[in-house]
Length: 344
Image 1: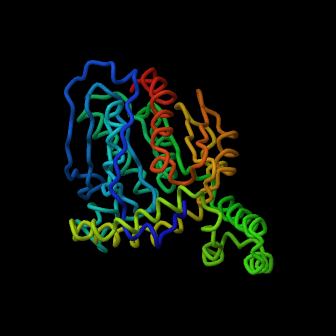
Image 2: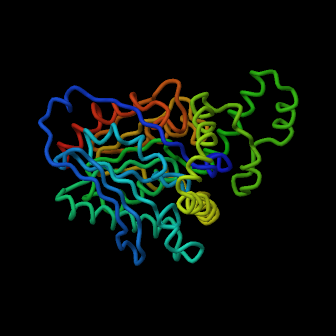
């Protein structure tokens, strides 16, 4: 929910990995799709990219995190997914290309408005691609948005998938402090230990206190490496696409500031504990940004027609980027058959 904003603002790197599942590779391919366009959603133009090798495949809508972390800079990461799914990347209101259309004049930024936008995007995909239902995948902030979408219009969705799954702001704040203190003690860092012990758990109603806890030492090595790769690739992305890069950065800042009140009110174990669709969480086992312990507790409390939890070892908040083979295997082997049976 609260990603390491300073690092992510530097941009996203373009990395491609290749994973082909035998069951999908054996199918005779149908016509594919490769389409990017601005679509009128919620009264403004919003950027949507649709890519897939076979239109018969289930549609998977990626609801990005951040807030404001548009996924177009890492579109190549999704190329392997396109054999099994028609993948949809959507720059939310206030993010990426969509932010570039309106800048700081972007209207009506709120969780409610973005969730309604997401429902409109889903309806557009159903019409355009001729599908009864869509799989929705929410990452971090996007898991809050996607949960809200599914709660409001469950009949549109064949499955919900969360990663970097949010539970509540309070749980995130408390667990981040506990993880940071545990790591400081484990490392024998007396200065950090004393500072954390003196401060105590932050007041979840005070964002300055919550953001004062430095969780970087406790982050998964894969997450630290991912953030370093973003920094390394930022200059090249800026040189190749300066306006888009600037829109990405500015949109990230714009969205992060405006989403904070809704993030602080988030309490999914209280407000979203019953789902009318299959419910999946594919989580990095070592996530400290949206702590895995809170995600697992939330999962355990959810009631759904069916549900499954997949924990990926040696991965953290960005498991879908840093453990691509394991993540895609979970999507294909665990989510896809259920989604197809549910109407995708």
